[in-house]
Length: 576
Image (tube, rainbow, N blue to C red; front, side, top):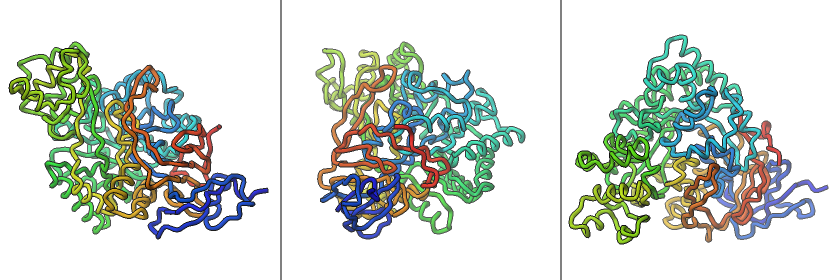
């Protein structure tokens, strides 16, 4: 009888620990790395020839919103196509448990703008065979998965459960008894396997409050009382486990930083801070954040920044676009029914206000937005024109008027492309040069009609390592796998070592690439999305089973729900 189920033979191993790469074999048995070294082929059932290929730990994506998508997409794509073998769900305080049955539709509606997930897909694709958070985890565990799932506990549903919908949305401070119930629910969720808590705190008076409910109002966590966060942090302190993920943007950056530090100090646990992003026109922002994170490390405060390291742009229409919500004037004009939005965007009395308060945070310069999909024959002449160029050809028309006249004429269906606001390579390098900034913020599962940031692991290797040689392969695999695993409490994962779960990627370094954007009509409810696939991943293994071969899914669902961070002792494989 063979000692190994399969062996990855003669690959160049970059094991995620930052030691120098080396050539060797990896023997896998029962989903675990049983041996690294030289292995006799006679002892093997299956040989994977990795000659000339890189063998590395699967990537770990800490910022996703696959809470719904996992039910219809076992690979959690785009992430699963780009070498990701484990994802964290429940980010930003958003999720679907605990949710009372009468509020299921409203909880799905909340995701249609803040994360731009189609309502029809959620309604058709989610089984809703749970009410409580422990029941939700049981449902995730029953669901076929080709990646591992680590669950954050989102705070938003807990607030609604305890305070009631209206009071949670109004930001009413909980009573002492209600705080006790909030703590009880978090403990219950973590007892069942949750790995910490998450919250978005984008205060409604802040300069970058882009993440809104479907009706333009703040999300419950945006307006929750600071004392509630303190109570949640104390739960982690008392348990001595877990971590926090928080997106906190108000008008006072010093106060924001102090609050992150307070949460980390109160809990004694890691705080994942979103987001470290370079803006081409405002480099002082990311530089100040990097200085602060360095100061936290020097003072022993466990705040870790998650860096936005992809420059994926945005293809969008006003049917779904929400990333102009940092401007209250634009937010008000782009919410409501289709007739309401058309009327507001066509209203000449509003135009000056929209010009005076043009959005600043989501994209590059407004006038550089490109018209990529005019729908009516009379508008085809503006195809591939920037708003600025089209306006010049129209006799000096303002870019806002160019855009909105097209949008109204074509009933919101005009397609545009906006470059990301972080395209300067020298600013990206400043973020990469901080060895403890996590790469990513894919937002996988969210913004499906206008964002393909799930490509970031492939982009990181191709752009940051191969093209610009900012860091070594040894460093990048530590940053993409081991570091996020350590910060977020993934047990035994993120490195290749004997005794670890066999989450492994085998790829062609020289030929690895991101493929062009596609439109796929593959969502439930007849919905579509924008995607970018990868080329060059010869094999992806999750818990020892081959889930991708030559960039193609094998339809092997060997992913696991990682309760309490998982680990070899608690691995549970879904049914084939």
